[in-house]
Image 1 (tube, rainbow, N blue to C red):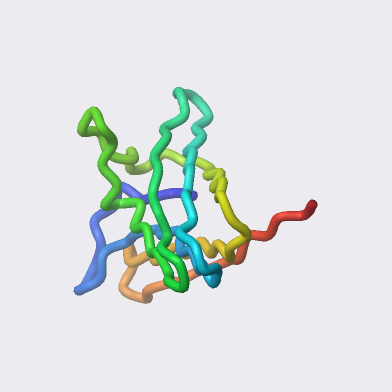
Image 2 (tube, rainbow, N blue to C red; image 1 turned 90 degrees about the vertical axis):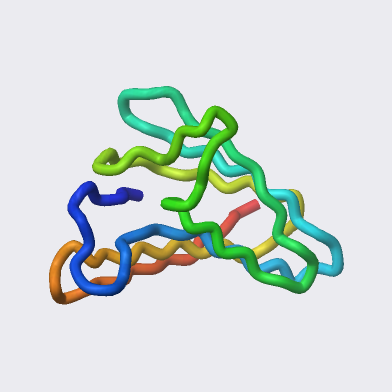
Length: 110
């Protein structure tokens, strides 16, 4: 994962998001950890309601101490869920006039 420091061009803002699909009949608790090469991990929690989706824009996350995910620094994420759900990661890169989008699905192998 990587949120560029460069300002976006045009109307869209570069961002990353973690999207969760909960097709269960109970709410799903999400524990998300962001890992870095040279600093301590960052942790946050969220809920994806039953029969709903949750789209977590990483650029909008604010931690309890007021910090945000740093720009221009690569990181990885670990999403732990209380139920079996689908998790998708998407990056929208608008740092150039020709926008790019990349997405991938996560899977758990038991």
